[in-house]
Length: 216
Ligand code: AMP
Image 1 (cartoon, rainbow, N blue to C red):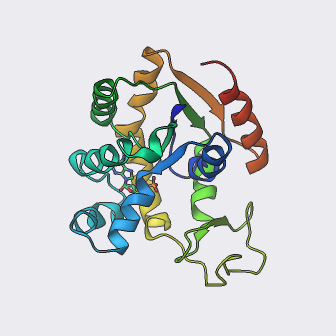
Image 2 (cartoon, protein in one colour):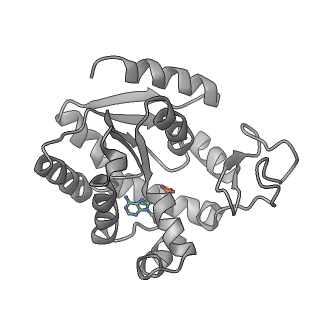
């Protein structure tokens, strides 16, 4: 299965991606996670990406596309993949299609997660993560067992810099201007399915499994 999770930041794509990748034995590729890793490791690519990410802007296409292509050819993706947070521009979408075509492959499905804007802001502002194992929590919907502390590592949870109120708004504008056109792009190609992203994590999970188990 080759699938894309598309939708605004904070809609729950990352949370669901972990579960779905394990359930369907496919490789999850999250460009946000890959970029954050590169920033933490201070690689040249990470240093280039850092400022864009802090401002809530998109990292230049050429940087992100290279990162994804390198992973797509790896044996880990032989059984299929789930792209979370990529593509984010029509240019990235075009590049991905031609890259897959070159490998004799194509996408099976694009799942578009929809959620009202007020809920998106609530989800992003309550998100916390572990600086070590990167486990993601939410103050209300996925609270850690002990307040402010990672269940796995016992370290104090942190808020991503770009999840702070001053950056959320610009990320949403960037999403509307640059990423939303991909909804029509994949609709035109007949592979888009819309998923209601509201409600509890487990409810969204159930809807998603039903959707992905149906023939494309
Ligand atoms: P995310 O974790 O998906 O919300 O991504 C965090 C940040 O990483 C975004 O705000 C962008 O700065 C950058 N990023 C992630 N994926 C992409 C992409 N496909 N294209 C450009 N920038 C990206």
